Image 1 (cartoon, one colour):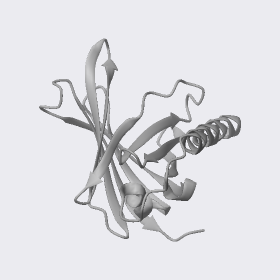
Image 2 (spheres, one colour):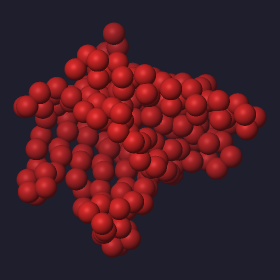
Image 3 (cartoon, rainbow, N blue to C red):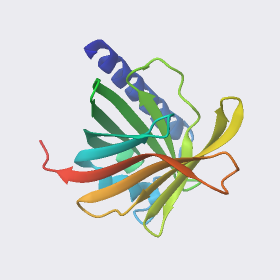
Image 4 (spheres, rainbow, N blue to C red):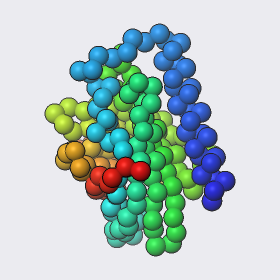
Length: 188
């Protein structure tokens, strides 16, 4: 497991270096403090996370975990590292995020520690408005088009809520399948 962890951290860092290089090559001007570049600053630090994940059977599985989030690239990027303490063992995952000052949009990629060399899906993209972050990804699941939505809400200095939902009708209805309730813990 240690080797897989090191591998996906290496993949995560290489991806962020590539993103940083792309920003440098495009000579983008840093976004002003009032822009969305600081939208994820609330998450920097250590968290206890309660997870609810919907299984294919329709039953909800619950477990706890931890999360540590670090800023990168002057705030225009960050890494959210998760430890999932499930009944069948511990697993890991990393969310990689990058902000594009030209569009005002964040892109989010996911690296699953169970398959760290798997291909990265296209990013989930969106922004925060009125204290709620909404991000979308359009793809295919079981040969059918699907739209995925991430929602960040209920953000306070000590808590936050994240929800993932899917839609098979182009966003008319949504079926939540993963909810994370974040509670801040003291730093190391």
